[in-house]
Each structure stands twice: as C-alpha cells, then as structure tokens.
Amino acid sequence: MGLVDWKHWLVILLVVVLVFGTKKLKGLGSDVGETIKGFRAAMRDDHAPGPSPAIQAIETASTPRAAGASATSTAEHSIRSAAE
Image (cartoon, rainbow, N blue to C red; front, side, top):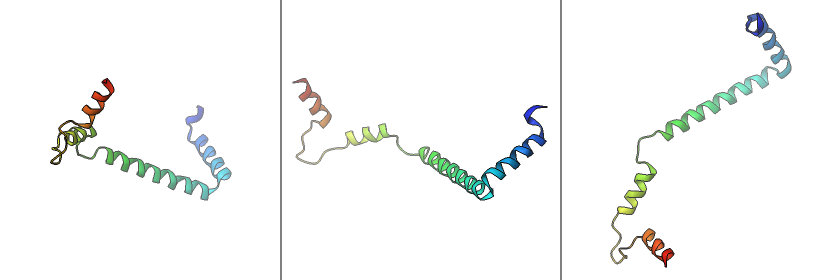
C-alpha cells in the first residue's frame, strides 16, 4: 500500500505532535498563515493599476523645465561630456 494509506499518515501525525508539541505546531501554523497573507498582499500591490516605471521616466523627462533652465536634459549633457 505504501505511504498513502490513512493509517500511515495518522502515525506520522501522532509522531510529529509528540515531537514538536501542540503549542509549537499552532505557532508554526499561524506563522505560515501570516506569511501567506503578506505574500498575497505584496502580489496584489505589485499588480495595482498605475503607470509603469518606464512610463513615469518618460513623463518626467518630457515635463517642461522651469524658466531659465537649459534646454539640454541632464542625460544629453552627460552623454556629450562623456564623448568629449
């Protein structure tokens, strides 16, 4: 029958309870539950609607500069200075 028999699982469960005790198993169960909740919340936050970082970078680069600022962007300036 192998390890899938319900009697084998009952014996394994009994040994685990005797070795670890019910308090440690309860604490382990609550810790695993909190971890799963945190993971789900993080996954939900990652998929929240909103602009991607690439779109935010494009929008930031395309915003008009304050009066008196040079027309050359900092990226263009750094590329030109690196080429010289």
